[in-house]
Image (cartoon, rainbow, N blue to C red; front, side):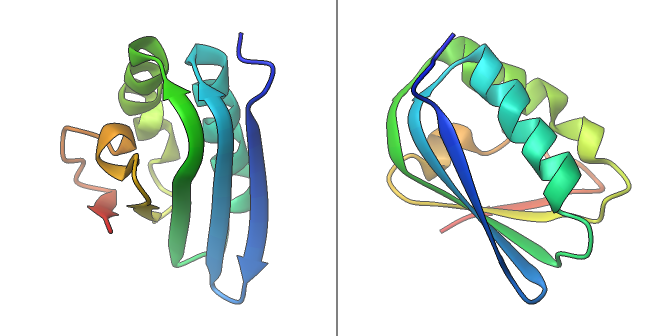
Amino acid sequence: MATNFRVSPRRKKDRLELRLAGDFDGTSACELLNVLKEKCNGAEKVLIHTNGLRHIYPFGRDTFQNNVYTLKGKGVNLVFTGKNAKKMGPERKKTFLMVATA
């Protein structure tokens, strides 16, 4: 369990920004998914900033990617930014979820 992982949410009108920091493992993936479920209501776009991530464990990435479907019905547009954006975004396209990396 990555005890140094943090998600810092910030709401800006119809946009939610999440800054990730620390190491990203399976527990971190579940925490990120829970924050998304709790905070993304009413957000047209969710920016997930990845520059603060030190290490992304394959299991954490896979856990996130394999469970992002739980956001189905939320109408979420996830945009991953920063140096780790390509490592974090879901690999498989979901019909209900638009994902971009910037």
